[in-house]
Image (cartoon, rainbow, N blue to C red):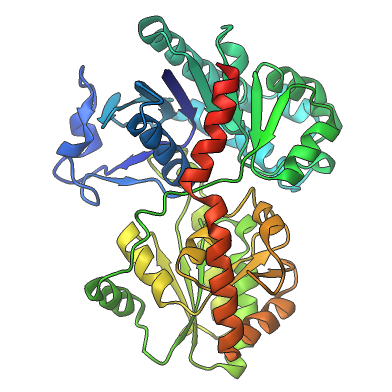
Length: 453
């Protein structure tokens, strides 16, 4: 089978400076072999689902012989036009800055609506210039895919998330098209004025996959009549190894952690929806009883907020707000903003922490919980996250109200003060993590793909 995957977020973020900058390698006719570059010097893998889910899925399908050839189209302004990674050929779509801004604003409006942040009308979305740029970007993606299809003759198109929603209709092909919807889907959050255009786009796909049972029920209740499934997001556990002493020492040095510190860990991109402010407020209360407690916040902005991406400034603005909050609460010595961590340091910080927290106000799923479980760490999980339906409260995790920092603080303190509770949560969480590993995900995805083929 030949497959073409389409995402907005690229797998790779190229450095704009350094020995092999994106500017120096742009414009090559043949695909650039990624193995000729150095991770951390020339490029980084994007954090989040494209690296945790899409790449392992393609890699395993290639290794298992289910896929003979894989192509991946994504937005990546200023990057090399084509990159090869094993059996995957990556094609980057460029979007000029003036179009990029409008596209970013339109897709943020859609994202906000599905996360319950405002109810824009169809006139505010469909008839404004920003939506024209959103459509224009999707047209560029569809045209790139159609040109590739004319040459490669794909058997399946796998489109990922709402940013690429119009692509399925724009491809104008009878070949199977599968949509993976990663963000929340709750009927009450969808403006009624959007029903017609959403139905038109969603019905252009042969099947839709959402991240949990709750979203599947909402999709059907909303009125979607086509084929639809839920498959829990998954990760390849192979990179999540026990860290060596050098990496442990590097993390403790960079974060100025002492052996006596009790580490509360949050891993998420910098975004108000992720709830870093709530966990900071909770930490201020925890510190009263546990003076050596340290809140470590790992993560930076998303692709949308990066200079190489869409250039939206919300992550930088949010970090400023969070720092001001920390200063106001007078806990500067107990809250550490770590920024981006590569995999080896992420492993070390997971291994070093005492408890992890996912305080998102809305969350499509929450793969960071699975990462935490792989290290048998006790985890507090927002009841607004898709993964919450896997939580047996008090057994494999603790559910929290993301709008209630006082309750959050109480539950963090309970875990820090009870080693048996923490151990049990971690052990049971590890068992639950097996439902969200690549083997299970690959089996479920392949069953859906096979039915379409």
